[in-house]
Image (cartoon, rainbow, N blue to C red):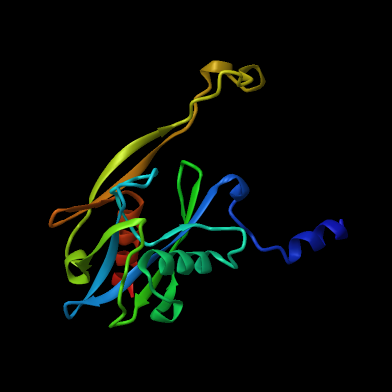
Length: 203
């Protein structure tokens, strides 16, 4: 028993089944734009295979050689915006976002120092800025999507109570939208924005 106890006493908890999930990290970038605190958003290049033309925050997949999710977010941000780490000041982490589609997302709030010249790379069509005051005074649109379990064809129904008549749990997945000028900020990006606003409003 003591042998098993030692294994648990100093163990750091992680997210169960994290090994099979896609892990990404993003920066929620704060910047002074035209004299007022704003959030920077990217519009993804139309040439990308995944989510071309969509609005997102800087960031990307966590690689094996990244020391931490935060380091991955900073690395990707520097690559995408053409800036250096010394141009960034990390404020802190937001809550980890675990999605129903095997994605774990680690967001961090980061200030881009005033006067930093941003030169987006080929993954970014362009960047735009939304005043923080607008977001603080705007309620997001929230729509619900249903989430349900669909067993595989070879699922062993004979091993569970009630077999094919088993009452599987269902759930709701909220999808957030912010509308700003000609831009539609939605999905995980909008969810992170809403969480960030909840945090700063509560302090």
